Image (cartoon, rainbow, N blue to C red; front, side):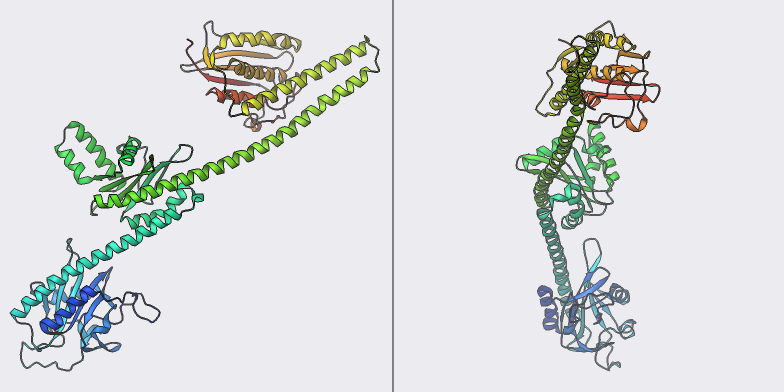
Amino acid sequence: MTTTPSGGPDAPRGASGESAYATRDPGLQLIAEGVTELVGFGAAVINIRRGDEFEIVAATGDEIGRTVEGEMTVSDMIGTRFPISVVTDLLDMSVDWGDIKFVPHEKNTIGEAEGYWVPDTDEDVLRDPQDWHRLDELLAPFYDEDGELVGVLSIDRPVNGRRPGRRQQRILNRFARQARRAVLLTLHREYLEERANNLLEAQSFLREANSQLGLTGVLEAAQEAMSRGLDADGLYVQTEDGDGVAVAYASPGVNWNPNEHALMAGQSYRDSNLWRDGQHAIVDRDIIEKLFRHGDAEKKKFATIGIEFLNAVGADSLLVVPIGVETTSLGHLVLLRGAGRPSWTDAEGRLAMEFGRDFGRIVLTSNAYTQERDLAARLATADKVHSRLIESVAQELHNPLTALTTGIDAMRHEDRGSATWFQQVGNLISRSDQLVAMVDDLLLFSRFSDPSSRPTLAYVDLSTLLAEIHEQRTYEAEKRGIEVSLDVPAHEVAVLGDRGEIKAAILRLVDNALVYTHRGGRVRLYIVESANEAAVSVTDDGVGIPAAEQLRVFTEFYRGTSQAIGGRKGVGLGLSIVDRVARRHDGRVTLRSEPGTGTRVSLVLPLGQPL
């Protein structure tokens, strides 16, 4: 009989040495017992395929046989395993009796040579050719719908000691067909039980997932359990994080690029509809190919895209499951099956909808955690900025206030109206102007840092505004011996913005240019237009900015190492204010500078059409 008590070298073993699979199947056990009791045999064994081996799941018979490990009854064989090749070799030696195959001892070259179970008898010489030999065997192989060998019924030791006649063969064939149905049902039940266990494992993981992992972390940790539980070859998830940014994840080996795969275009719209209706979607290669063969031109075009898409991701069937919570759609989960795999069914789709709901909760929880983490980071940054602000303000105010105090004290000892007295008054006015400028910068910075503060929008003519600024700063430039030129279009250059904020930003660009330009130098104010934008540029031929500092000059309270030629350095907020004004107006700031050559800074704003 095709059994071996060793279970093969790789068979799992329990604590007592018994096979971990040593479980008697009740339904198959009844069939084995029916063969022995109703048809008249001393031993019957049913084996089920487990990978590259067969496992004995039902056995009956008190016959004692010899093995390489000693004597053993048939019933003791439950849970043991042996290679598939043993069965296939015996089938090659067999005589076809329909569903039953007879292996005569004359052809059986496996039995004792390999140490398998052989009845404990020495009767090798038969009185009649129809007598049963101890190496004779009956096999009923079981094949699934794909023709794969999945089980076998092994029968031995007829009670009457004779080979089965025609009547007994017919009965055995009926038992073999019944056993095949039972084996296939058992395998299907085991498959469903494994699926159910995997589903429970995956759902349990999702429901207990730590939101601190983030969306990608949860998917990386859960994708294997999800694929096993849903019997998928791979999966893909697309959703959004708390800031509305798309998050996409594909399990290893899935060639999925949402930017390249046109079939998923408009999927967000479909997601919301699927979630609203509580539905899933199934995409099958067979259906798409039929559409290509029989559809009109528009359908053929869609089918072509669909076939290319399935080829790209290596799938023949897709199950699209919406992700969401309550009335909110949050994205989709796509499960893949490759060539030769069964197509997705509606029953599986309904089951997968649970994952869509569970994952929707994960998305919301993870996004909430991410937002809390980002908020904490912003608060920490704000706290650092606040501390730096207090420190910088204290440092910047200390010197001019000390100078003011010293100047006032010195004036008390000077004659009113004397040259020295007037010099002290001039110094006090200069220090006061410096304090006013610093306070103005601090007030603007505070206002622009307030999220509730919004620009007062109106159409602003940049040509007129720049001419106004040029006129205001001409006197100061002449005092410093700097030539300031203006180059603006004759026509109106309109942007939608807050005139006061834009003027404050440009004034700071001009003042920076005057401070860092030598006497005799030049500063140029001009406007350059493009199709959608206007750039207000301030160029000087001053000291320039070292390359290592150019990325830092927009940082609050940063003051570079370049020497201030035409005045004192400010508090370090000028370019930071310009940058904030630009961002509040959907614009940007560009900077180009070379030490010793000069600097160009441009405030770029989107054009608007005045009413």
